[in-house]
Image 1 (cartoon, helix red, strand yellow):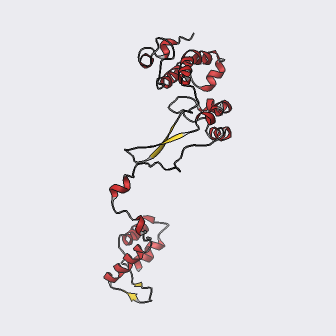
Image 2 (cartoon, helix red, strand yellow):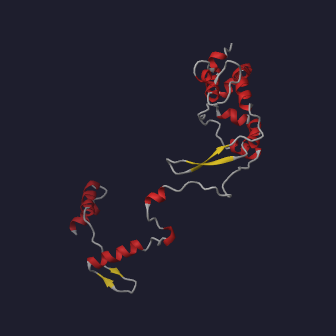
Image 3 (cartoon, helix red, strand yellow):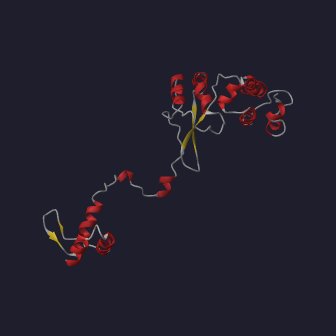
Length: 237
């Protein structure tokens, strides 16, 4: 008691002495005191105290339903294949306003995605970009990933679309796309943060994913992906 009084009295003049004295009591483990049961009975025996603490711990968990208990982990983590259910998702409906609202949520200084298109371009061209999406992406097909066991959807081109629409698109973009971009005023190109070479590279990587028949005579899908790439075709001044 005398040592405690001295430590408290000299706490301002000698704080280290007070904290050294206090730390000696921190290393001691305080035993669990007696517990009272719901019936009001006092329990002091350590074994009975352990049983009361175990019951209290288990009481916070809910009992699962018999039909939802996980019996076999293999069947739980490997769901069955997708059945041909009439309620399976087939169409995703969204409007131009939905696309514009989603683009407006982008931050102007966000890093571009895998396509390399700066966010500023998407924000400034949101009205033009929002028009073709509702008419082109109007049907999806459910797929099943065997590795992850998850469902995902894949776009199905509209049945009424011409068969050569991809070919016409790929044949015009390599020649006209970079040239149009190069004709823009320099201040507008600088605003996008995308150089002409970067634009050609990203466009070429997209066109390499377009299969089907050659867009122009002598321009096959093999040479488009290997020897006749976009930088070789377009020489911008």
